[in-house]
Image (tube, rainbow, N blue to C red; front, side, top):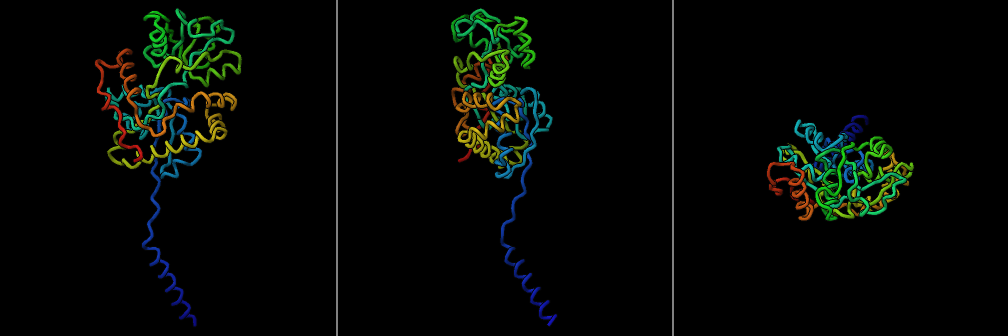
Length: 323
């Protein structure tokens, strides 16, 4: 009786093994190291939102997210082989032209409502016209904020000396100190920071830079050349997960604001206002558009980023977008 029972159990086990032999095995998740050019910038932060929600994991990707304090430092890490994905801005295409081993694979945002012109809380300035001839703070010479200050003068027809760009850094304490010491009359900074300064009565947002500046691939996702060569499907999966994340953000304001507030440290009230200003900037499918590329090329020339205008088609690709 015992022998028959043993033989029966053995046959049952063999049947289970035979039946499962044809089943596909779950693919192991791919771990990608993602470098963010800024910890809190609106075009960049969806990677944290998607990671928190498990959207990237659903697409077979585990993320290791690393924050940097600028696109150049992110590109240096990419060149050192430390990153698979760079989450930054279209302006970093200039670094691709200089030899950074990466290429743009997603225009995540076009316009720049996440950047704005701010003034001290008690400033008498209330309109764009009142900025003519004023000292405007920027993060550093040759930076995107420096270019945006000069673009303000150009678009308003004030001439090359229409405003005076003053390098003061981009930290909240630096901006507040420059306001209090009357070193600048205004500053080009992140809108969420300026909205937070409104809450603290140290400054206020005058207007987003979209009041005078158009699209320029303000948010751009880059893939390392190594990842493209060795695992192009991982690039496709990342882009697909990014698009799904942004679609979620569009239809789930409260949940998005809560996650972003936890990441930025700004209040949910500030992030809710910021959400309303910026959610429309995200592209629906990551495709690079002609207007963004043309504005980027012009900015590279005017900021003297490169010795000659680059062939922009070599700096980005739409090849990894969902079919």
